[in-house]
Figure 1 (cartoon, helix red, strand yellow):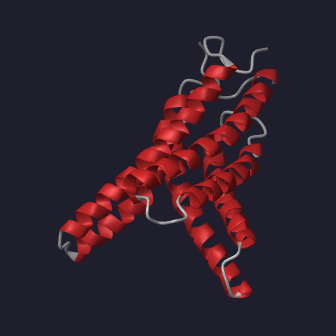
Figure 2: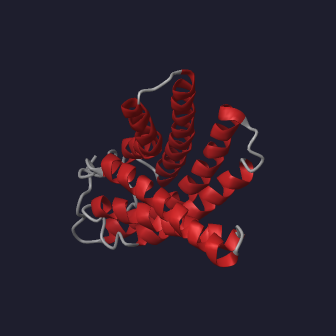
Length: 212
């Protein structure tokens, strides 16, 4: 049986998924840049400043989750909570990355590549676990998504950090670096998605399939 619905090819799903993650990552960074620009130009009341700070942390996950959902809704019927789970997972993953990297710096006495990689993978696990709560309703053995997310997030974050390491790129340059990281994440998770779709279509009773 085909790995994707009959009206879609595996290549179409893969390319759409990579494009969605590339666009979502780029849009998230542009949105953060716009918010910070507005916040820097205005003398914000403390309440508005807190709202702006919350938006800076929530917008990337919201935008990436939305672009991912636009692809997944073509495949599954029960992914309505995907945007919310990705928003929360991205926020939790960023907090886990920062905490674990901070611990590694404290232990080693300096920033290390190994500590950053471990922290990025842990952040990816948190994101993947949040998304798993939605994906498990659609695909058997969706736990593979958590491990795929850990590897993909690690690769994407490392590439983003490498591409933006000079810190002088500006908003557009940083957005381009985000697009590179998002594309890498999309490629890795795209392979995992196709793998899970193949398992779904091989099962006798697909769970959350959206029929053509």
